[in-house]
Length: 367
Ligand code: PMP
Image (cartoon, rainbow, N blue to C red; front, side, top):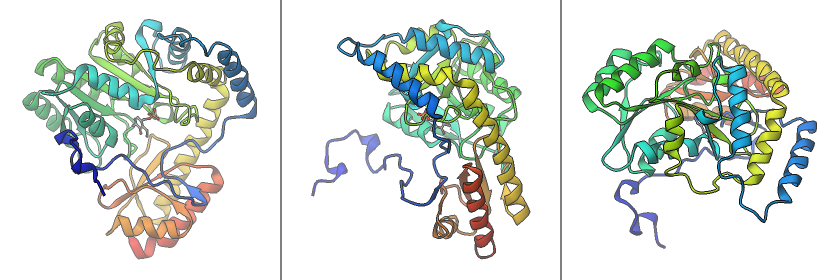
C-alpha cells in the first residue's frame, strides 16, 4: 500500500497529520465550537428564495468581487463592532480559514515566517506550513494571557512577516486587551514592518468590545471574522476580513477567480438579513457560557476565564483519559493537546446540563 510519505510530496508536509477533530456519533457533541441552534425556519425559507434566484443565473460566473455581500458585511461590522467600515475595507472568502490562507499566500510563503502565541488555533500553524511559511511558536503566561514582553522580544529577534493574535483565543477562551495588540503591532512595525492578523472568529461572544477600531490608521493590522460561530452557519463557509483597502487589493493577487459561489453569496446575504435574530441566540449562548464556567468551578475544576462560546477546564493528570471518561457519559468534548486541560463548546441548556452532569461524575477520578 502506498503511504503519503512514499509520494513525492513537499518535505515540510512529511510526517504531519491533517486537521481532524473526531466526528463521532454521540448524543451530545460539544467539540468543535459550533453554534448548537439550527437556523430559524423563516431564515431557511429566505435562503431557499435567494438561492432559487441565484440558481437562475448559475450559467454565469458569480460576482467575482462579491460587492453586495461585502457591502452587507461592512454594514454589519459598522453597526455591531464599534467602527465604521465600507466595501473597500472588507473582503470575503470560504470560511476564515480561506481568508487566513489568502493572507499567508500574500504576506508569507517560502523564506518568510509567521508567529502565533500557543496554545492557540492550530490552523494558523497548519496553514503556514501549507503555504511554505515558517512557523514560530510564541510564549504565553501560565494563565494563558500573552506574555507581552516575551512576545515583543521574540518579534524583535525573529522578525516574522506575519503575527497572529487570536482574540478570544481558541482553545483557552482568553480575550486579548487592546493595549496588548498595540504593543505587538508596534514591535512588528519596528521589526519589519510585518502584518498583524487579529483573529476574532469568536468576537461576538466576548465580554469586551471588538478590536476592529484598531484598524484605523494602522495599514498593517487585519481583523478576521466568520459567520461559522455567531451566525450559526458553519456549513455555509463564509469568513471575512476588515483592513486597509490596500490589504483588500493585495489578497486579490492570490484569490482564485470566482472563489465565492453565487449560492454562497446568496445564502450569506439571507443570513445577514436575520442578524438581530441570530445575535439573540448569541446572547443566550453567552449566558449559558457563564453558567458552564460557574458550574465547573462549583464542582472544583480550574476554569480559564472565557470570552468564547467554549470553555477550557482542568486540570487533569491525564487529559486523554479524562476525555474518554466524559465520552463514556455520552458527551464529546475536545482534547486539544494542551496538557492537563480539555475544552467544551457551549451547547443548548439541555446539552450543557448533560455535560455538567458528566463533568461532576468524572471529577473525583480524573482531576
Ligand atoms: N479562527 C478560529 C480561532 C477558529 O476557531 C476557527 C474555527 N474553529 C476559524 C478561525 C475558522 O473558521 P471558519 O473557517 O469556519 O470561518
